[in-house]
Length: 167
Image 1 (cartoon, rainbow, N blue to C red):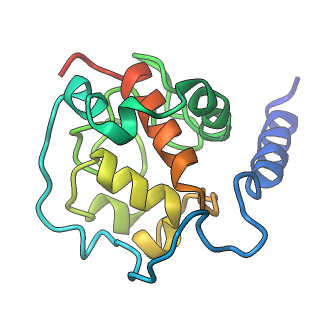
Image 2 (image 1 turned 135 degrees about the horizontal axis):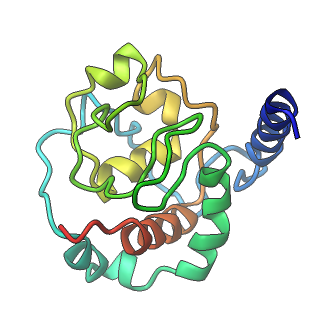
């Protein structure tokens, strides 16, 4: 299969998957508060824990990691998750937790992400996955977000397990 055909297929898959996880109203499922979305600028200081300690937190301990694995296929349209995996349309996500945003080696980040100045924690990733463009305006990720908080928890719990670098 030629590289051009492969790129077209990946782009088509990404576009078709882009609406997955979206509710009919565009509002997060089960959301009753109207707090402004968390952004890279309002993230503030974060507590950095090991993946094991994050997974012990109630919302990740109770998350459906099987669903998270299935939902991670949307991530895999652009990212690899395996240790030593290549950067593709997006950077490799192995060991992403506790990594400074925009710092994976050999990946050409957008200027805003390279200058983001935040650490990837479950809290940061949750806000990113909810609304990538609101979290960090000007980023290049072509993903509209996962509006359902339980789905985000499932993806994050799965990624905490699967991409754990042993930190």
